Amino acid sequence: MPHLALYTFGVLKSPLADPSPLTREFHESGEAAYREIAQQPGYLARAESTDRSLGARTDFDADWGDWGEFVVPAWYGKGRTVETIALAATLSLWADLRPAFDAIYSGLHRGALNRRYDWFERTGHPGHVFWWVSGGVIPTWQDGVSRLEHLHDHGSAPHAFTFQHPFAADGTPTSVKGAGPGATGCTVQP
Image 1 (cartoon, helix red, strand yellow):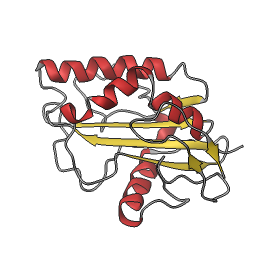
Image 2 (cartoon, one colour):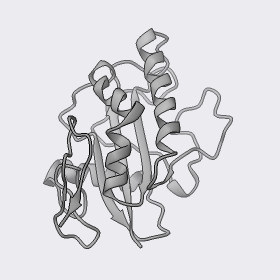
Image 3 (spheres, rainbow, N blue to C red):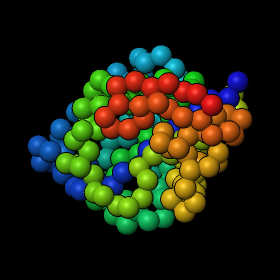
Image 4 (tube, rainbow, N blue to C red):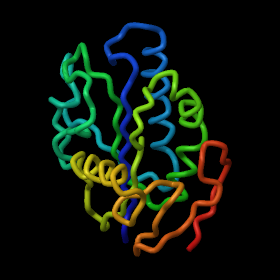
């Protein structure tokens, strides 16, 4: 049975190490939202470092296990050191489009989405991309970056798509009724 992979990437206005209240709010809301999302039906897994003692290291230095080496899109131009890194990226697996939609556009994550422009720069690049993987396949960070760049260059296609222009696992166009920031639910249909 295929699973849905989701890669998100955003460039932060301030480095993660910035001690400002706004950066602390981002950290706190993100951690709480991830805990809540992990409890949602249809959520399968997300990339997490296998090294719990990162200390002063960055995502670039972490061991991500089967999720592969941490990489970012070529257009990311900010730092890669503990003091300068200014990005947020996630990589996760879902059972289907509807559970992903419901988790992302509800609860704490919905609240964080409403504040995204407080924290993130508007880059002109997509902030997320979906694609289907065969059951048992773990997507890598490189897969996510490649799909996001493909989406930016070519638009939604079965290879890389968004909620607004989704594709079913068989490659046919589908829809997620109610997709978008104001949505309260969705229906997935061919």
